[in-house]
Image (cartoon, rainbow, N blue to C red; front, top):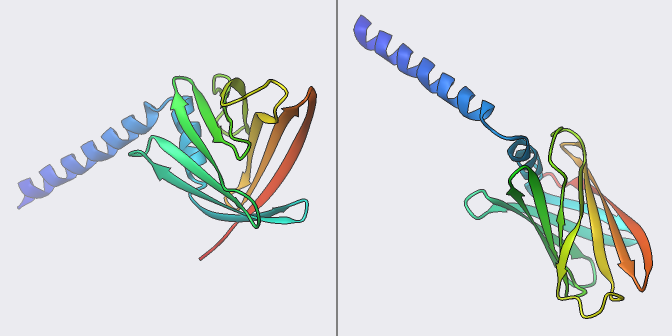
Length: 169
């Protein structure tokens, strides 16, 4: 009986040590992605008088976070967040029918806002067409998120800010 308890205790300590080791082995980009996945669930907001619903779902065996952006009126858009080495990628499937791929610099501080800047874009018919050029994700706390999107159209650039609150069931 004592021997069985001893082996159980040793096994439990090995599991705890192994789990701590796995957590310590995570890269900064993996930690930042884990922080992003904490957005999982439903959010609501308003931008320029338009009500917006946003939902986040972890997919692809935990390797991607999908954002579904649903304005009260207008087309749905999707943004997929993934890890690539020491940085994160956001690929936005836009209602303008183009797909900007935006990338962070190497992640050094997982608590800082994630600033994505345009790396490449597909589906753009002309450089003058409207397209997103950047995204900053600011997680103020577990229930408040701000997104700052930058864009360009016909050599004119601008920024739109979206503020969301988590919807509690």
